Length: 241
Image (cartoon, rainbow, N blue to C red; front, side):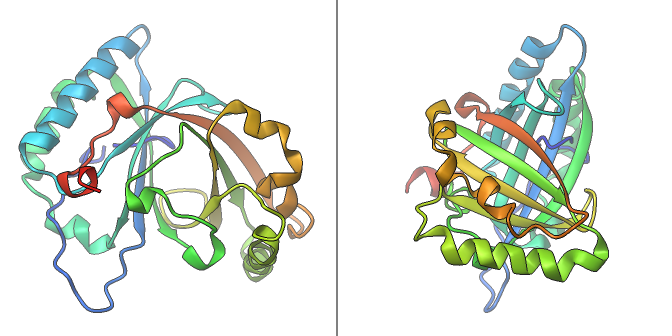
């Protein structure tokens, strides 16, 4: 369930993956929906009902929800799950029942517009709050489309940014790399913003700081998302933290 444009078997439900030594739990799934004309309120209500389906089926994952406030896709809804191994997709709980409920409660009021699988690049990030079950009220989401020949240079640029981030007191940010489903090769930067006044401190903006190292040919696109706690499902383990 998520936005960046979103079903897929819409709102996939997963069993908790077994603990496996060395298992990579850095996967994330983002989906985007656009409500049909005049049906945004009905979509919100239906989505709440679908989250209840996840709750009654003891979904072990936390599903975040955001509205797009600014940038391409304004008014869209994005949902996503973070910090799981990609193998979780192979262990869905009652996918047929999930799809039926989603069709009734969600897809009747909105069209999925995008689905993206991304991978956390923790070594390039200063924080990873979603993987710990938290989101700030606002998050700026910057997508970087990178020419294939510039991937090494882009990786190097992000490492340069990380090397100065702490000393420059930059706002916390997370870097994800495309695995499938979006413009590729691509990176996504999420900048964690507590309020609009965070835009006043341009000297702390990691997006602006990164520009001094961006390789030629890289295109960037920015959105601002508003976290919707009322359209977010926290798994029991996360709520207990």
